[in-house]
Amino acid sequence: EVQLVESGGGLVQPGGSLRLSCAASGFTFSSYDMHWVRQATGKGLEWVSAIGTAGDTYYPGSVKGRFTISRENAKNSLYLQMNSLRAGDTAVYYCARDYCSSTSCYGMDVWGQGTTVTVSS
Amino acid sequence: EIVLTQSPATLSLSPGERATLSCRASQSVSSYLAWYQQKPGQAPRLLIYDASNRATGIPARFSGSGSGTDFTLTISSLEPEDFAVYYCQQRSNWPRDTFGQGTKLEIK
Image (cartoon, rainbow over all chains, first blue to last red; front, side):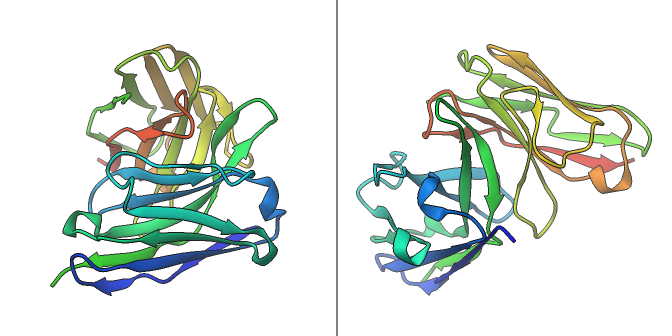
């Protein structure tokens, strides 16, 4: 079964750090681009970061310089290191697999169940 | 940044009716648009990619159309399990995707 399982969420104070993990199974993890997407309670989806199969990384301006995405193919794992956390980072964080061909990427076809990050004093 | 605007914010319909959801982009995204369904407490599910292609396992009652800046998700005859929130996502600036704010499809 193709599956993504996130872990590492929790309560952290403003300015603190947290590392999220996403364990992949049922597919060849190293062959897929991967993303982190977050969703604040009652709000929409926000793309947080992406990593390509070659390890190239991408971020929106809202988290650039604070968040770092990485992958460890030997462990079929994706990570998100989050530093200098703010109240506005409070959300459910999902990891997601990108469905791509050799020429284009179509959509995020596999998602984890999400892990909750709460930034509060 | 490409902004996606979905309308209406809420759509109230009955099972068996036809649903039409709209997504408008602030600039052309060609056909690089996807649609997702999200139910409470669940992760999003990919429905449509490249504006009109159904993802694996998605029923034929779901269809997508459009290109450029205007897109539509149509559910031909609503089933009880279709009541959810729907998001569009542009992929023309991959991987710097953006999502619309969502349309809530509720039972009338």
